[in-house]
Image (cartoon, rainbow, N blue to C red):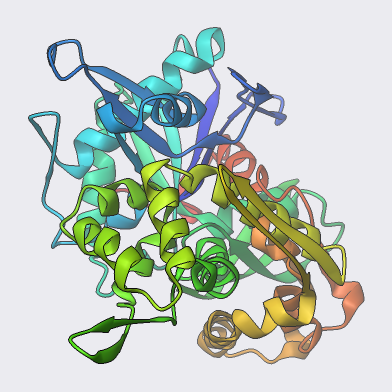
Length: 432
């Protein structure tokens, strides 16, 4: 492994790792997962222990964590999207099976299991790692310094001698810049699960090496996960009682919306089932004006249908990226929800998020002091870059021939790994 550079794109939804050798090539680390080999490792953790044998605690990560949770949801604590807590000063710790976990503990546990599942390819870690970081961390008031200190503590536990950080869109830009045949000013948009990040960089080549000058950047804490929630809020929650009413002491009252906020993340549904709200929800089956809808909500929670629901949502979102109309189908137990959805409907649902993304693009250009004519190339990466309404934001500003996309999940990790082979890393990275 001597001479290899490791790039880690720790994402809200997926984590991708790449290795780059002295020859300049990069290779993604792959995992022999239950459903087949993959390189996008789900950013999830599970903690499982029999209630009568708490000492037999088992920790899993990635698709193995999902598998453990789906098999035994009552005895498993499942955590995903925990990257969103990295910059939150209000998140100090959580109790998991009687043990205290701070953010660093969760991240290091995740990384150690990821390394184990990688097998021989990461049996002997390189001494240098380049870690991707968002331009703007998720959260209402993100504390960047706190997030990076937490990252540093977690990655140090894996024994790295040198830990460097680079903006995620800069990693994608470096990956893209290898194919440039001439100097260019590039706007890179990286659309992840939790954040959408933008960087504008001037690239040039000097003596065979890529030179770069950062010009502007911005980010916003909305992306693919927010799109998923909009689909559920408009397609699924109304069928489970949202917007309906119940009768109490002769009055007609609305079903509380708070029951449906948990659908923003499928793993949170198990917490709703274990909350005091569940007793109220069961009571509403008798009091609701449309009891069949509340019965569906109870069944969804009791039978732990969250994972199946989000898979149905993901399939619809992917289909609407290539088709103007697609079928939504969610079938679990006695629940059967089917509907044709037009792309225009979906785009109406996500208008608030699209507006925030659009504002962030304009902010990056304002920070760089550049107009659209000064941008030579646009590179879009990340799963939500495939959403036509997202792409339209750029088509309204730039000629279509300047816009490129591709390598939606691998470009950041590969770019970070390749970046680690550069002699002057300070141009690209920062230290804590």
